[in-house]
Length: 328
View 1 (tube, rainbow, N blue to C red):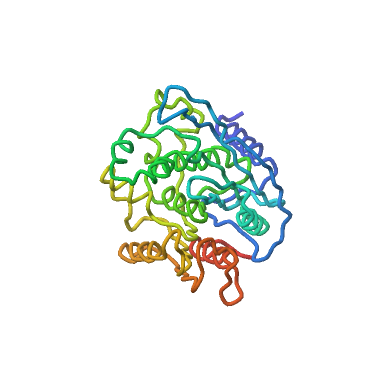
View 2: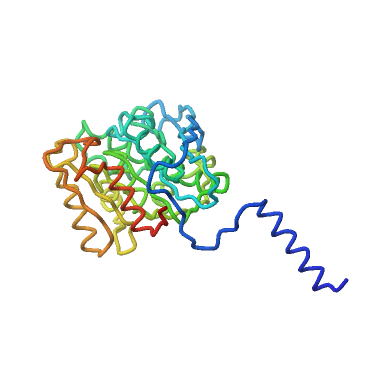
């Protein structure tokens, strides 16, 4: 047989085998989602996405290894081209859980419309994750009562980034199109979402080594991702400001992800001025954003509606618009 013909037959056979009767998705084809709740949602709890150390005291040699958990919400459909949403809970880096009711509701909302959603847990203040020396040195400027919370920011962001790397590494198992990644949360979860979305891949990762924290090797260390959109519910950019304070990094530029900002004007936990500051940063960088001032509302205003639309309705519509997703 002619070698050229033989090669053509072999390549064709391999292509057919790889598709496994699945529709081939051309490069850069936007996912198709539903405007309405069209799919049953398959929930799997306590997937392990990596490990992290929990020290007896600040960076002590005595430490235990903690598994890091997340829940998946997968639409029961046949799509081979699904967008991704990662949700991060609030709680001031001190408490909270991936199964907070508003997050579960939002996860089901998006998954029922065609997104794959993961809601993650991460190490909190009481877990005493490994802290870079530069952070310890900088803590002299932090009020004593806030140092524990300040330290907790680092492992929380390290873990959230590890979750994203795990998802990218396993994207084919969920038919996720990793060109369409949204990250969001409330309060500390929103702050972490901004930190994960805006910071460089090396930030909150390469400040410590695997000799200092061997669990880093469990976190798909070499995987990369790019966040397209951030959902900021009453958060702040404090984790990005911290990078500038400690390392002098400037991470806000014209290439930052688009952002949905919703913040109560009467918020006394994370003041409304944080939202206004973030809006000003986006305006200065000519980056895409939408801004909702939740008039008269305080912190954690999940039940807010605007012109009859919930925060899930509004954020979903924004993600579809800025990511050019196809809605049916």
